Image 1 (cartoon, rainbow, N blue to C red):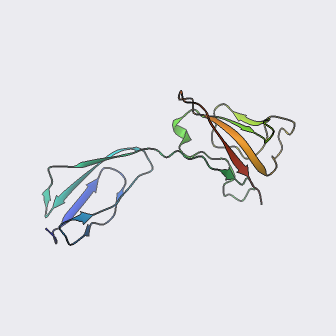
Image 2 (image 1 turned 180 degrees about the horizontal axis):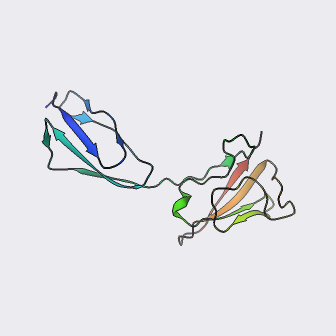
Length: 152
């Protein structure tokens, strides 16, 4: 049924314009909103509302960066864990010798590379590779990985 008027609506996110594929099918792209959750998509063809709908579940994004640059330029100045607001995050940072240099039992995406433990408390940690343990306090094992501090 090429050439029909197809209107698509959603309860969340953003829909692109509907494209007629000239083969009886139509395409639109749903882009997620900032908030996780389930959205419903409804559509009408030539003004007739379809008796079916589709649901799409958007999960929250959880992303841990491999490094940051706390140099005061306003870009990547803190170690920000995307999606961490849904957890009570505990963060521990260790230097390459395994010494604890930073700890936050309730991390708020605010670490700027300043040591809170060890012999350099209150000082900027030098550029380099550090190891971290992130505990999401959700019953799973802490995530242990490495990250890099690189200033200009």
